[in-house]
Image (cartoon, rainbow, N blue to C red):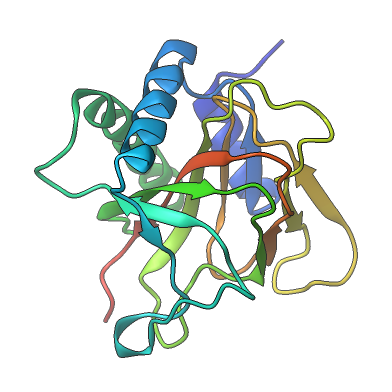
Length: 205
């Protein structure tokens, strides 16, 4: 019997610290988000993504080559609101199971050009404990083997030794993992690659 997406997410985080759920987001909503992402990028709304944060933020294309557009609170489109409402339900369910104290969600559209990549990294900034769970929604409708852009995620927490998963960035697939524990990278892509990448956060003490 197939598990419901939320049950898959909770079980995966509980048992492994990460999970990939194909078809987690409604197909039509995913298509509309993909169209919005592409149109916004073509309109020049995206900026080169940086490495680090605050005054230490800098663009380093030897490490990452994506362009991003942050989804701003109070400025969301209808489709963004649908997505964010779904994700907020996930946040509440994760809090209920794990008592993480997640209080909000920050996210951005990401566009990788042909040949783009992001070398191995962790998602939690040094000196910060705010980002707890990474959440990725893929928006690539016609992805095929050989198109590249897979998410390579090492499956041993805190290590780049041992096994890893290669996750196809197919439309509607969502990936969740503990932001400070799992090393990951975006493999070079053979064609433009789109996603919404975000983080459930808790207050820093």
